[in-house]
Amino acid sequence: MVETIYTVAENERIARDVYKMRLCGDVSMLTAPGMFINIALPGRYLRRPISVHDVDADGGWLSIVYKVVGAGTDDMSRMTAGTKLDVLSGLGNGFDTSKSGERPLLLGGGLGTAPLYMLAKKLLGEGRRVSAVLGFASADDVFGADELTSLGVSVAVATVDGSAGVRGFVTDAMPEAGGYTFTYSCGPTPMMKAVYGRAATGGEYSFEARMGCGFGACLGCSVKTVGGSKRVCRDGPVLEKEEIVWDD
Ligand SMILES: Cc1cc2nc3c(=O)[nH]c(=O)nc-3n(C[C@H](O)[C@H](O)[C@H](O)COP(=O)(O)OP(=O)(O)OC[C@H]3O[C@@H](n4cnc5c(N)ncnc54)[C@H](O)[C@@H]3O)c2cc1C
Ligand code: FES
Image (tube, rainbow, N blue to C red; front, side, top):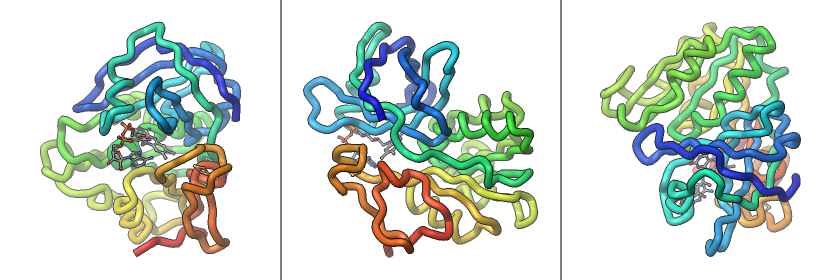
């Protein structure tokens, strides 16, 4: 982990209340898909953790996709090119692509779709046949499907109100057992719990938690696992299927 300064290069709206921001600076510590950064915002107390969507090491930039849900993300949505941000970068363990088998299935719920782009790029670069199921509330919320398709990922979309793709939840559009070799999931806890119950293979699940420090010092983000308590920020956010303990 390093504290660094990133400069906003672009910040555009890509879906309802959802923005994509490109940040320039040192990205050498962002080595795995599923890692996150923790952004200090002027006048706001805690940093805001946001997953990395894509990294270009040669170009010296990364992108994030975020939804405006409160004051901090609202501040971010108003930032213009040239704004400097104090960021803790290179946080979290990220997804392990060596476990994927030949046909990994990526499952994203809402903003959980964001880190799947970098993951898909890596898996495709390793010669895997990648498919994805993305779930949203409604057609206006959908993002990320076209960019995954243009990489060569086979994408299915589910919306709760049926206004785009399959009507229902991510699990309603999951392929049958045998159609995939491993799952990678990121999204709200109820979605991941449903995927966990339905998935026919092993998998990795990326968790969110309210965070204090963001780098392992405060224990504020601890979750129960079969091996004892783990910190989402430092030992996660990605946990193995076998170690997950769901709180009822
Ligand atoms: C590892 C990690 C990765 C994340 N990646 C993304 C991402 O790629 N894109 C994205 O849009 N968001 C992501 N989040 C959630 C993001 O951090 C929060 O939405 C953001 O901090 C809210 O800040 P705010 O000031 O706008 O809202 P606040 O005023 O702080 O809160 C507004 C609402 O958001 C909820 N909230 C705030 N922080 C979190 C949190 N950490 N987890 C869950 N709910 C929260 C609050 O309960 C409240 O309902 C991630 C969180 C974690 C822990
Ligand atoms: S947020 Fe402090 S230990 Fe995870």
